[in-house]
Image (cartoon, rainbow, N blue to C red; front, side, top):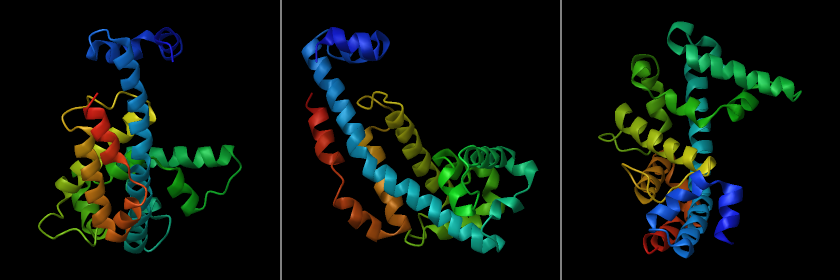
Amino acid sequence: MDWHVMETHFSVARTRRYLNAFEGNVVRAASAYDQNMLLGQALMPMLHALEVGLRNAVHARLSLAFGRSDWWENLPAAEFGWSLREIAGAKEKLARRHESQAPDKVVAELTFAFWTALFNARHQDSLWAHLRLAFPHCPKEVRQRKRISGALNSVRDLRNRVFHHEPLLWIRPHNVDQCHTRGREAIGWLDPRLVAWLDQHDQVKTRWQICTRL
């Protein structure tokens, strides 16, 4: 596509990062823009496996711990104010769409940020004993709240960049390849069979190699 057309429809501010990276070479900049988009596409299977797998694993563990599938109703407002507001918002969205507010529907409506926030340090005493059981295949010496939270937040930041169509080629401190590896590791902590499934669809390594040669 003509660079002027890209600037017109994708904005100068967005495309300038690519142009600057290649010292004004519009051919290389346009190629990088395309590869950035394809890299985001390639990340979707990993993001899907981790986000959906994580929320269902956490939901199962907390449902068992609290003895009810709407376990969030037992969360104290003083500690979980933000989380409870997110749940209320999810219910409102379901209501606007005239959909059921059954627990499974609420779980599916909640954001990845909601699930990763449950691993924050402030919930160490109240939730970690239950949440760690969501990762039955995580080695004992690795299964620490801080380490798991760090991996999840790294992938969450990457996910947000993908979903907002931001540049992926120059993210720091961890590049896409490193974040992808951390995501795959976290998926393996849930169940190695999910990694085997992911291997059938995951093209990130190949796509990343193309990007590093730009």
